Image 1 (cartoon, rainbow, N blue to C red):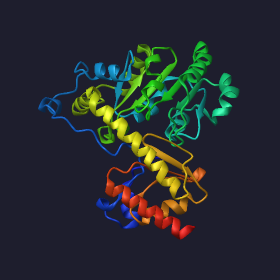
Image 2: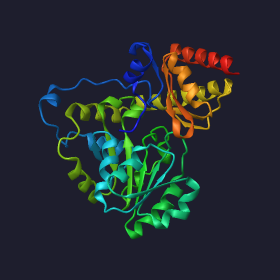
Image 3: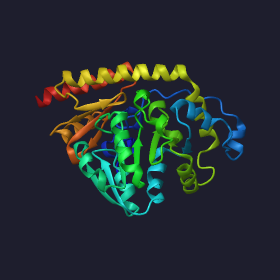
Image 4: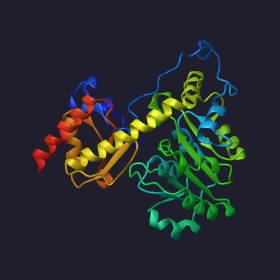
Length: 330
């Protein structure tokens, strides 16, 4: 399996620091989970059913005509490559590593390409995969540009797959409302914005024909009854959503300024994280980990990603650690 953020128990073993004493900034999740509603006992006792209102709530929240709930968008990432014959797939990189890995495992030829290379390679590709906003760089592409790429792929049966896992803070930039188009597939993650990664819920937005094919791969009862209840409640809670957007935007800006004050200006980011390229990424990661602060290290391009602190105490702890790092390595 590929490495990901959130491997807190491994850090506990590696550094001998108790789990409760860590400040985990490694996952890029909103650090303020939505309140869990009271869950009817029947959600635990009966098999889940698809007419409970979850799909309707998701269509309204995403502004999409059709949705398929899945047990985390990771599920869709792994299953989508099975719906096509082996072909040529471009993955806009660097990005979430599971995309390229999933297409390779299904026998496709994968080329990881930079943004400025897309127009050159696009007419040779059967599928283009884009994470927007990107993880970990935070790069956001306009809907107009993405639809131009889709228009070059779709007439010959190609797909544009857009992973919008970090789009909730900027819904006006989403392609969700365009997901009726043949060959356009939009993935949405529930856990990141709502701070509830543990419920394992995601959504695929696409034309009905493709969603039915994907549903056959996912199988019945893939999303549990309690998860469906939690998801529906959160998707309908517009007041909490607005509050989450406001505080994550403020926290992301605060994090960007804090890193800059310690001569670690980020090169990218979004509302849920900041991303820093530095030749000393290993050193910074290790320094923080020894103090019980877990970051996400990307060794292949010497970068680190900082998630958002949740409380004033967390901010103070991070600030003190950055100050100590600056003093030691200035």
